Length: 385
Ligand code: AMP
Image 1 (cartoon, rainbow, N blue to C red):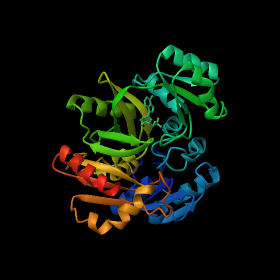
Image 2 (image 1 turned 45 degrees about the vertical axis):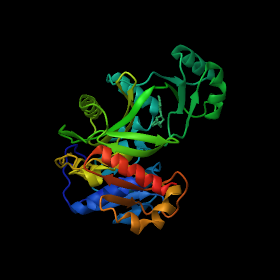
Image 3 (image 1 turned 90 degrees about the vertical axis):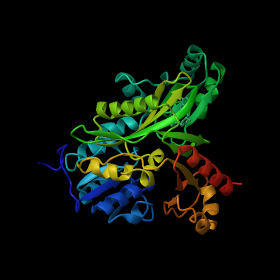
Image 4 (image 1 turned 45 degrees about the horizontal axis):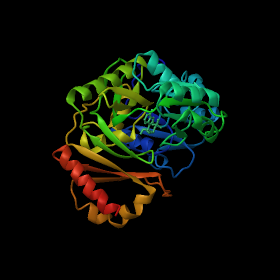
């Protein structure tokens, strides 16, 4: 069997290569190390979160084919912890080593327009959307919708960056200019009157086996995930539907590895998919301390061609992101915080704590969701007076 065979199995002792050196790669690499794998990481700086725990660090750029080739030379199987990689270069390199999830899935997830078109084509509900090349098209779209829309860059936006709200057709020209006046690709999406945002992380193996983690309920502040509550406080039938929907997308895209599916629950109780991420996801961090198998271990299992672990949740949980502005409070009260035996503090080892930058997360577990939420809220109030 050649190394690039879709079903190839990689046993402990093999090297898992990660494209990207952030916290998602770090926590995946730590899971891989716990299982006995070696880890190679490609990223910009040797003190990046995943680089710190790698056996082999390749300094380089995720867009540069030569840098990607150096990571491939150091690894037996390759996966990405961020979707903005050079997918075309990966199409060539995958003849040497399997890339899981594959370049076509990465190419879909890195382009909002391609993502929405793909989802619509496979029959997955999404917000109304339209590619926008000129301000008049945007004005017409808002007029047709009869409600506000969001104008987003098709590529590169994350944590709420690269998007602007358009209230009325008359606002179209200003909005269009504020996102580069058409220099970058743009997509307009009807604003969904959502009552909740939820997400599901699903793992899929080459043989088609899938397992999805319990649904997380997500709250954003200023476009950045603030907290995830798991299991989500939604009816059981809706949670089942969300998991089946995520599993269906993973099958349709033939994902091998992890796929995170972000969804809205609208005011009619319907699920609409907002975004796909073919990698571990911030809203799945709760699995690290609250589930039989974490999303990071599941990632390694799926990428290495092994069977998936159980996804049972052992305790209800609330995850709170620690951003740069929160880090001083966490550090100064670190020993006191850890006196709570049900609080876990994860820090990503980033040297520079900029505002809005994800530095770590807190995980509160309890015997009920309500109790976990209550404790998390009290904890957060004490950290951010
Ligand atoms: P995104 O970068 O697409 O994940 O968007 C970031 C956040 O903006 C989402 O988590 C939502 O809170 C909000 N958002 C994005 N798209 C929509 C939409 N079509 N309708 C309502 N809210 C949205």
